[in-house]
Length: 126
Image (cartoon, rainbow, N blue to C red; front, side, top):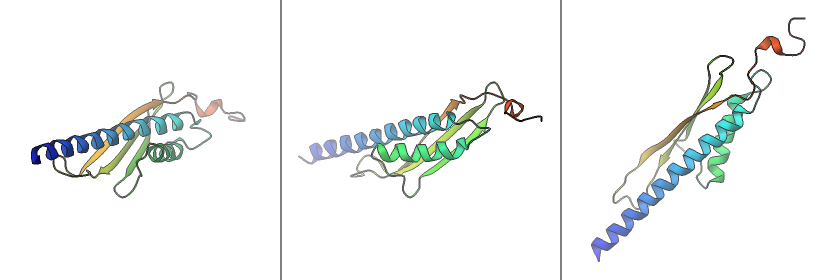
């Protein structure tokens, strides 16, 4: 019986870990895509992506609590500007028999929908 309990607890912990990894992956992709839809010349794609990642993580059932970090940076130049988004949380296992506390993180890039130079804005150069 003790061996069976350890196996079930281990499977439960690994399932919990994979659930958290999946939630973090989905949240970073959703948030980064949300930020990439904002025109970088007129809005704040970094703040939009950060808020989107935290919101998507919460919607997936994982709170962005202590140890949760986000980072969003713009990379590249027109015509290939993009956002690079990173999300990391602190994973706590349910039982801790086979897995321990560890960071779970994901990084993704999303290409901006708006690829234009500042001179393309209405009223620029006047």
